[in-house]
Length: 393
Image 1 (cartoon, rainbow, N blue to C red):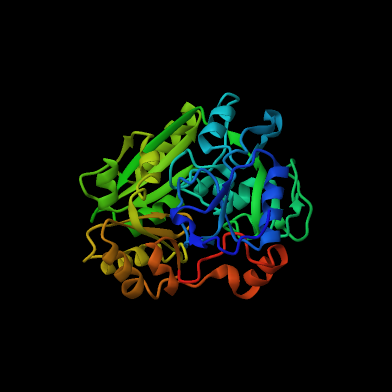
Image 2: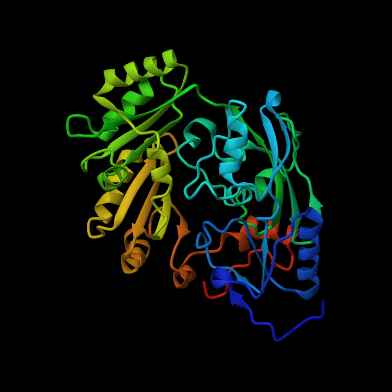
């Protein structure tokens, strides 16, 4: 294809000027090779269910991996599955459930999101409490780099060789090293019983006391998430009181035993298991989403500090992973409140910004162009063609 210097370069949050959706790895490699030859930046996307997540991308073409769908290899006895990157989380859940298995990933957003996007963004949800993040569950992957090369780090077995871990590098790289085309994932046995319990936080049972009690007792939880009163009301699990949501999975006897331990800590009540899906969808219409990290021991104090900073932001809601110490702040509707939140009230917090209005990214550093991350990116995408952040973001 001849170079066209007149082609406009636009922020692909509103669409690219040239779009391809290959159905083979050769097609992905061909698209990447053409982009390299023309020196045209590429936005790499999946199902585009979270297109406004992350900073805006400057690109003249869009490479969609939504056409790379289906299961490549599945051996239930090995608890591993290899799937194309465009396969949705819902499809993967359907296939594995038929064999009494599941993938322990429940990132925010719709289940129509793809496994490729989940790995590229390293998105995790409450199930990370038990199963870890995507980096803990991906055993191997194939990708096409910014050089146009196909790389195949990792493998289809649980044991992996030591060395430079390209699997972990590509996971969470936001497509800046290249396009993930397939992945081999670690599965778990699907619980026979899956129960969700709500533990209300109150003056008589404050958060710090409940967290300490949960740590002291013999508990094996799938998820353990604190939600503020705004979130709890939206999930219909309280009338406005803060709540700790707990997910228990296993045999009937195991679930009953765990429930007895929880009841001994404080009064608990069962909730609809669909609550977790509602929690994942809470940020669908958010103007800003910020993830704040810190030590687990400091979680109650950090939550109190963050809440104090949000008293004048009624559209903000908060939830936190008790085991991981991560607090997630969601601001809906009021874009001005979102900007004030970042620039003034959460400016000193250790944070990762998941979502912002497009014009506000300029104040946020681009981690993929500085330090070690920048040098790694140069090794795989020297022209910085893959998911290049737009200059004014």
